[in-house]
Image 1: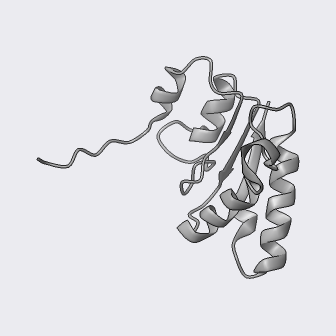
Image 2: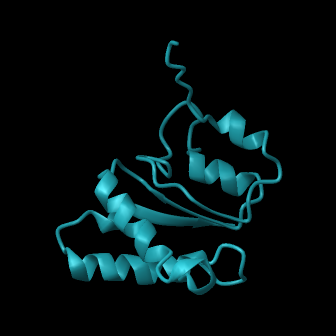
Amino acid sequence: MGETRSRLTIADLFALWPGPRKAILSGCDAARTLGEAEGLGLAQALVATGSEEVLAPVRPVADALAARLARGLYAGGTVDAVADLEANGSLASAARGALRSLRQEDPSADWAAFRVIAR
């Protein structure tokens, strides 16, 4: 069978109305605001659909870095996770802690590519 490829678009996100309360997008440029919809990236579109906080990179990042950030955000399992997306905790606070750890581990990593977009 042939491989089917598809892309998640801003229109797809608006079809989710309302969007998830909190979201983490680890794909390259997910918070970048240049593209088909002027000034609106995937992260900004999620906020426009009702998400409170979205963590995403503003430029391409290495897969290994995105994976290390995810491990840092979810360290300790789902109940004890730094970023419990079901809890009332702030994704911005969890991201700050995880990114600080990444910076200490590897100062040369592009940890500064990540942003929290919030309502």
